[in-house]
Amino acid sequence: MPDIDREDAWLLTLDGAPQSYVDLRDPSHLEFEYARRMAHVLDLAAEPGHPLDVLHLGGGALTLPRYVTATRPGSRQRVADTDEALLAFVEEHLPLPPGSGIAAEPQDARAFLDHSPAGSADVVIGDVYGGVHVPAHLTTLSYARSVERVLRPHGVYLVNLADSAPFPFVGSQLATLGAVFGHLALVAEPAVLRGRRFGNTVVVASHEELPLGELVRRAASDVFPARVEYGPALDQLTRGRAPVEDADAVPSPEPPDGAFTVG
Image 1 (cartoon, rainbow, N blue to C red):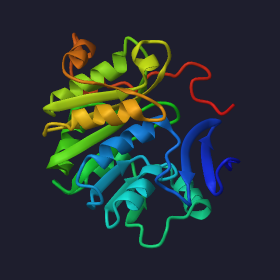
Image 2: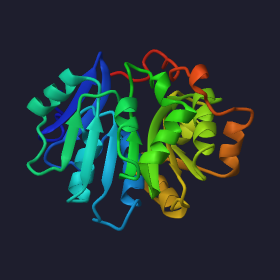
Image 3: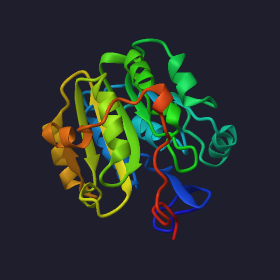
């Protein structure tokens, strides 16, 4: 669907739900709130303009890969998405610029991750939804360890998770990632954190200390302001929750009717 307010900008929907937004003339323009929050972390992952090696689990319309190409020329990016027809549709209607450095493959995200070389990525991004759910096999301790294996020692993992208070799913994911990574943060809209609505949260995980001060500033001053939670605030979300083993894994929760729809 074209954006009538921006020339050559497009909204991709799947089964009536907004899935991706792309501005072909200005890939640095991000319309979705969670994508902007992920971009803040990407901006802080290295010196401005420094190329990154990024592994994207979930492709959609390749919004974030395009953003990285625009803001960090020379970056090498690999994308896995199980929906081969969707990737072909995007390639036809929303083509990548020449020399983008983006390679998209129709593969299961977990298989793609497990077969990626150790220490090959500066950033791994998880944004995989089978319909409206994060698949169960992308929520486990073994999955988190596979992410850690692929990341370089300074690397960062970013994942988009939808939930609502008291955040049983996000809390279990924080416990799972906290069993593998030494530093965690969560970025979300205040209304979501206060339990007023179901919505997206972005979880950030790394072995190295995160640039929390600058991340807090960017999130708070964004067009769509967000809060960054870390330390004791995250301890409350994970209290009583154990890391998710393969045998106990379940998909992310069902969104309420109307939570993610096009009007």
